[in-house]
Image 1 (cartoon, rainbow, N blue to C red):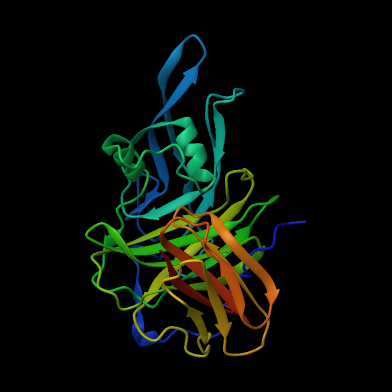
Image 2: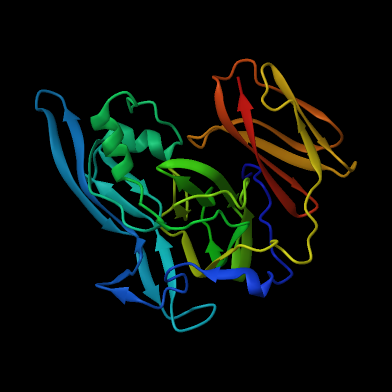
Length: 324
């Protein structure tokens, strides 16, 4: 049975029209050289492979995960994302990377295969953040994003998702100020969406000043299936009040900052589910089908910022939790 994930929020009502802004080439109508303008859908660089006796050597790696398809939600085209096998075929140095699209331009990389594997598993174990070279290599894997002066309330897009096996679609968005993330939004689903469906995610700190916005769309995870397909079209950000016919979840998260534990206290007794995630994408704690106030133990966590995702009655909430 597939692991339980946050149920995909299907938006049944329209966003406030006056507040929506198109993301650069968010309709994927403009392409150059087989790639969507303003987006990165490929990776290029060298994987450092270690082979007994021979030692380390760079193995060139290049792949394009995105293609232009004439099956849009609107307009003439949409973006199709699909996984690709990369590395040295029929060896331990071959991995399958899910289809990925990033807003903006990403740099070329020179990185150990183990680091890519850790990143796909949601970890940063092989990256020494005190080493400028390691950090620069990691940053080259991420797209630069696009200019943005104020964090939006939400991000929406139309998707068709045809997952195979245990695959999970994930959308990650964050705004930055001087290179430092200031607001965050995420969603994931393993549900099959055979027809275009509008999905939306909310930023945890809307209206925060920023200088850029980054959007990352993944069609699967580390153990992705080559036959999984994700179609994306009409990406927009909402600088207004968000979703017009969905009231926000009312919940108290306290104490925040927390030391040993914090409480999640919704204003209703309706059942909900939550997940606490660190900034590398790993889930630290979660609860399914719970009611009332819940205590989350964080005494074992390193000081820092964590993200709480809560879903109740087909509505979602994202909240920063600081651990001291």
